[in-house]
Image 1 (cartoon, rainbow, N blue to C red):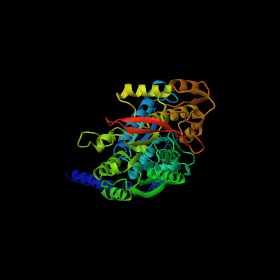
Image 2: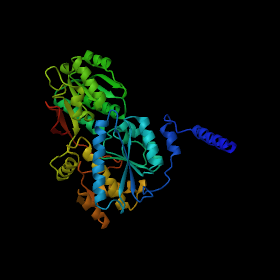
Image 3: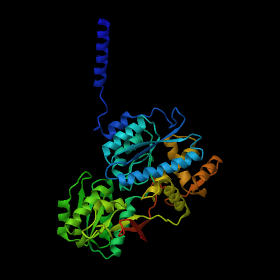
Image 4: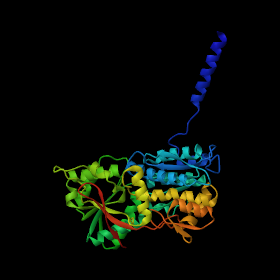
Length: 430
């Protein structure tokens, strides 16, 4: 009996001591975490002989309506790669984490992906803010980050050791396209309301500079907190200056609240609104709601979005596969996400390595000319295995990475139709 009592006491002591071991504080800075994380393996091949690929996207939060279809697109490409022999004879495993559209959640998720899953590459994040919050962590650990939806301007000049790439264009060109559209419409005065993060701030800065260079006049520029939920004050300020149009750079949850508040205060009637591509999602129409006549409040509103030549065979093939797999049409940045996964696999196959720096060193080789132009993933993998140079023609377009890991952007107008669906318009020439 005495020995049993001692045993119980010993177990309780061990439990107490284990409870005193501190976990990593969620408030740790990205710099602190980057110093602590060291991948235990140089490659992503796990003990089960499968290749680990990190996916960091907004499955919840303000960008969840964009992040979820992005993940589906990545899964689609991974499945196609696996059905064509995988990477270096190994099947892909996707380690998927939710950044909650929050920087601190992105940092915690990155810690898990690098430390626990030992991934050499992370596809993400959905938003520019979370991606910038983890970039120093991924860089210092030799992990490549490739995003299909980050458009923040500051990534271009960031010192990232060439470990940051994206398959969508920077807002530098998108903001110029919006200013060009405003000029074409004859607008002389503008106000802006943008999310206060790298996406919104960078977009607004370029737009204002370009709009003013065209002779336009800025009346008011507002930035809002990404966690904000009440916008009465901001809308009243916008109403008081009477602009020709308002530029809204936002995400679905906060953007829909701003538009609903503007409608309730009459500002949607008093000024034209141009919306960023962050609101180019069907769900936004339902989130804003309908008027007393049962008409969608956002019907007719729209803005600028990345242009996709839907007549291109590569896009049509992707769209057909996506629709067959998920019984719905792909959303914005879905084709870019498919391409991100495809390029990672092709670079690994060509490099004969799953190391982050090896992927980096071969991404331009498989994406840029010269090489055999190819869009089918099975054919592309086969050509690489035969020692051929390829020039991957993406579902999202002709992807060519520059020295910053950026791609060129082409844009078109878009709007919500009477049914609340997205209607793509004319290509913007600038």
